[in-house]
Length: 442
Ligand code: SUG
Image (cartoon, rainbow, N blue to C red; front, side, top):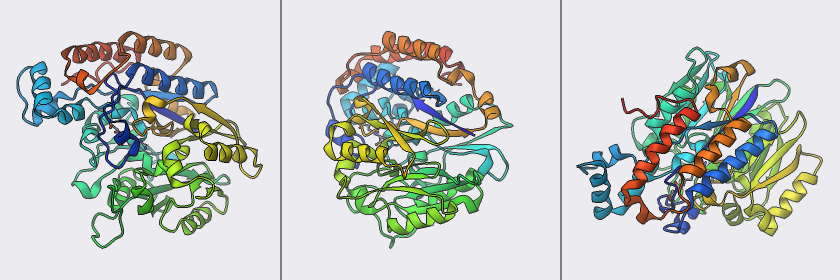
């Protein structure tokens, strides 16, 4: 099996709306000026660098924005530009919800189950409902459509719609899911991390910030994805770290195969969790623990150390793909330097990336990608237009340079020409990615 990273493209309307309470970067950046063009180029540069390292790389199509149907659903009427103007006048937050480019964090798009771990031997992908935040809850219908276009072969891939039944089934996708692998048997271990038990009012949960993922949702995803029940393990995130700004598990831990980089405060009873993972992996886990003394939870949230990608670069070595902030902070830089020198783990290299545009909204390297484990044959069944090659990279960067704005503020969202620019750009993108039917409304 190979692991393909499907990155999200930063959208034409990327801006700082302060829409994600509990995600500190989002709140701090509210109303600052964004650069959609820089954001998209930064993301593509990372994807290209990983592809140059030999890691197969895909691109998931951007969503059409603004999501005018959502504004119409909220009672705004008239022509498209009238709807935009009326929403802006009545409540600019409603307008920013419908313009949000948060779909770019594809770790939240879906949860993936590779064929070797499923009961029917198919690859399953379930779109995440993202119902914890209004601006993200509008993503899943398009995500479902998009995943069907990117993974079109129904003999091989089954794409599921998002979970229904309300807030008890609030799901944030792969940001709270890790597939470990036993190196001896190749067997997977699906590690689901939830923030709260929705149907048990007595159970512990954070006090200050919302816990977005529920246990009930994680369990349902495992069932829908047809995962072998013996390969699943459900664990509660430490409510204290959610209250410190860790709104997804991928802000406090990252795993790859049998390696697990985690903060000692990540889970309720972290030590017991690590022991259980080790046991389930046939005692082959390579744990890399970060103590509070080495890096505090606050520094972890600020630098996004754990939102790095951990990737295999050959049979015996891994690389950490980290945000540049980690290089600028003494504690995280020292930690990384000592980790890559330590021969007891396979992480031998670090690559730093400037992803500031995305980071300012709480999205680091790992948020920007959805991991899909595929056999070589299954990879051939993916829509080849969505795979990144050197020439595709050139086409996409030229497309960004042509269509994206250098700067965007909340006030610019009311400009009717932004809508027209976005439509024109999507028309061209659908040819570049070979997803011609994706943006039609019928
Ligand atoms: O859902 N930020 C996203 C960041 C998602 C990060 N993803 C992972 N950790 N996998 C969120 O909070 C901010 C939008 C704004 O404020 O404009 C936002 O949606």
